[in-house]
Length: 108
Image (tube, rainbow, N blue to C red; front, side, top):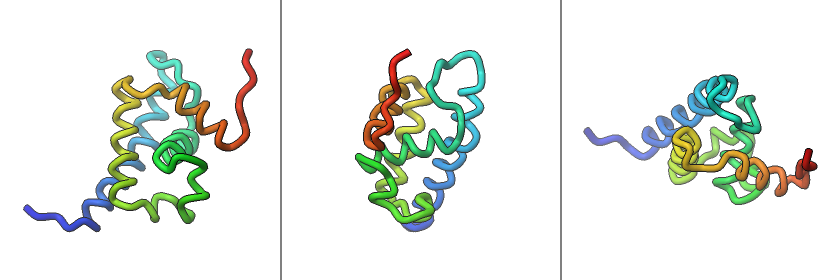
């Protein structure tokens, strides 16, 4: 079955939203992961900053999810899945996101 790119992009964005609003925050609140964030907007910040290579709102209009290209949506879903699989270092991604924003955390 052929799916046009607009529909595919919408499906990817729906997946990205589900992963960042439900799946990742729920896992972050469990005991298995020692992730630096647990709120949905933090996961969205990290993923969007990473795929944009800087502060996302310097690259995308608000709300970001409505303005993602197909390529950006694909990369966002891939990154979410890499975080879930333990292949992407969420601590490192968070630190980079904070650095782009001039908000580096002080060591404890």
